Structures are given as structure tokens and as C-alpha cells.
Image (cartoon, rainbow, N blue to C red):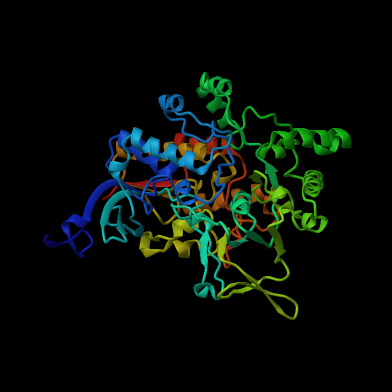
Length: 553
């Protein structure tokens, strides 16, 4: 293979060059749908995926008990009626294996894998102003030349592994829930520690406790969790939805969260209801399970005093379930309910009644280091050591920005995205970034993303991006870039509308508070999916208002 000078003036093997219209980073649900849509429109597309198969979040998160917290009949693609009709979900809330099988089925059905490079990671993306194109390189020294780059890297795909002193010297095994081995982990006969009590911990702890000889849970901050009441789906329920799937999807898109259109939502104030009726409504929502609990009243996320009624109801449920009063109180969250993403669980709180499960509170006595044999806790005047065979870090993700910033992205004038976002992410509509033409982010910061049914938001984002690219191609435009004033106005709007709610009132991964050193900025758009969708459509109707569109001279 002869070497030659490539488009960037670098000696390279010819097989390492590829020119295409669009490079998509990531082959999760966003990347797959973007590939399908753009390829169908006639564009040459290349997807680059660091995993060995499709699935994104559901490829990596294989921990015990991993399950979606949006109901199966809603957490799926809507772009193909035949796909909707032929795929049959088995449970109300699907587990990771079933969701991964679904993703694989979609890839097979639409022949997507032929345009996906697996086991390959994008290292850098550099914008070439003279040509209005991007130069993309990978960890396998492959280079791509594309007009557009779509970051479909997911909101929860960059694992947050604590930098504990001594971890490299631990003699046992350790895992992160977001990077779980494909072959699984056998905890039989093992003394296991789980660090963290977020969603992945709340889902995995009951399953690990069933297998391990002994389980110790290290908790810094307890989380609110509502029972899933998961069950097998009945044929008549599935048939009912499939008989009018299009209408069902349309109603969901009119919902603030993009799901739950059949769920009864109450808009009245918690203050206008007598105590007995108020508790009865909370009780009925608890019995149904899932995210619908916060739809009991219309002002639970707008009023601190009103929120207290819902929070105390859940705390009392925890006290009823957990036998040991001291353990129960440690498991009772004191923050506003809903300012952190509510968890949806199966048997979480009752697990702490097991003889082989211990809860260790580390809020005031944090983990000081990992030793050869386990974990050391810094007490007032001494160090306590706990010995373990296995450590499980359920410490979450560098949400919404981590997977994007993992790539060295450089826009106009060589501006690095990490420098642009040094004080927090800034976007226009969560889709585009000033200084980075022809770069799109799917479900990026500043969009509804994680506050909605992700697949509904993904489809909306991808449809908008594809329409934008079609618009540009029909007019021979070579670049589109968010204007600085439009970006500033959108960031101000996102912050202002979040400030009208209780969402920013506690430290959460919505704010990046789980990652040391990360700027504290509320990242999702809380205005709801319908309002956001209308804004995006208005922008496109107005000839992409807030964007600069240009042709090469």
C-alpha cells in the first residue's frame, strides 16, 4: 500500500482516507436512526462506534437488574409502523437484554451494520474553514473527510469512575456499572461493596444481594425511588396500543415528557386538597408505580412547601418497608423530591431487611482510600477498614457533556470545544454550537433530552437535523453555524425557565455535581417537549433563524 499526501497535508496510507457526507459518532438509538434517515435521503454516511455492536447505553450497561424506567411500549422507535407492529415487548419495563436485542433487531432489519465501524473510537474532529468540512481521525489511524459531523454519543455514556487513592493496588475485582463485562459477574460466596445509591445502584443492589455472601452499600446521599411494579405485558394491552399506535405516539409527543399520555395527570394544587384526599392520591400513584408519582399534583416541582407533602409521603413509605428504624432514616432523602431524577425500583428498600446486607453512611465520614483488601473510611480520629472480594462503583456518568468532550473537537480558529465549555456547556437549541459549523449534537445540553422519553427526543432531533441538511443541499449551502447572540439568548432562556422550578435546588448530575471540578450549570431544558419542538420548528420555518448559513466563495 503506497503512501500519499492526504487532504490535510499528512502522509497516510490511501486506505485510511474516506470522504463522505456525514460522520456520525455513536451507534446507539440516536446514531442508528440518524444513519437510517440520512442514508434513505441519499447521503453517504459513516458511523463510528467504540463498542463491538449497536445499542449505546444498552450495550454498555449490563449490570444486574439494568432496566429502562420508561415503559416498553413507549421506549421504542416510531418511525416505522411495520417495526412497531412486528416487535413484541414482554414486560412493562424492559430489561437491558431485551432492549439490546431490540437494537440489534433494528440494525439487522434496516441493514445498518454495513455503514458502522465497530471497535473504533473517534479521537479528534477538526473543522477546515477553507473547505467548510471536517477532518475526523480515529484511534485506528483512520481519517474521514465529511461536511457534517453528528455527535450521537448519548447523555449517559461517559462513566464517572472515582479517583480513589490505592485503587490500582486492590487485590480483588472491581467494576463500574456502566462498563459491565459481557460475560457477567458471579458474586456467589463473595463479600461485595457497592459504592453509590443512584439509579444503577438501586437497580443492581437487590440482584447482587440475592447472590453475594455479604453486601455492604456505601451511601453518601440517599435517593427517592418509586416502585416499578413491573410485570409481564398482557396480549390485550399490547393489541390495544398497536391498534392505534400512531395516535398513541402523537399524544405522547404532546406530553411535556414525551411519554405517559395515558397516565392521569392532575393539574390542581397540592394546597387545595384535604390531607386525607391528598394522601389517597399519593397512595394511588404509588400503587401504579413509576414516574407518574409526581403527576399527583400540578405544583410539586414548583413549590418547595408543596413538594414537602410528596417527599414526606415517600419517606414514610421507606419507614414502613425498612424494619430497622436507624437504617430507614439513613435511606430517607432530605432533598426536594424530583430535583434529582427519581429512580424506579424493584425491591430496593426491602433488600435492606436482609441479613446479608449492611448500609454504611459516608456523608460525614467519606471513603479515604482503597486498600489492598477493601475500603478505608476516615472517622473522627481513626480509620475503619472494610474487607471485600469485589468492589462495584455505581457512581454514574459525566452526563450530557462527558462523551462529547472525550473527543478533541476544534472549530473555527482551532477553538477547542472543551475551552468553549470551560464554564459550562453552551448551545443553541441543544443542537448546534457557535464557533463549530456543521456540527450537530443529538439530545445535547440545552435540549429536553434526559427529562423526556429519550427515543422521542432523539427522533425529533434527528428529523430536524436531516431536514436542515436537506435544506442546505437544496440551496447549495456549505455551512450552518449558530449565531453567538442566538446561543446566548437560548442559554439565558434555559437557565431562566429552570430557575422557575425546583430542579436546580439540589446537587444532581443534571448540574454536573457528581463529577469533581465540573462547572455547576443546569443542563437540560425543562420547558417540555411540545414547547421545545415548536421552537425548533419555528426556527426552521423562519429560514433557520439564529443561524448563519453560507456558501463557499
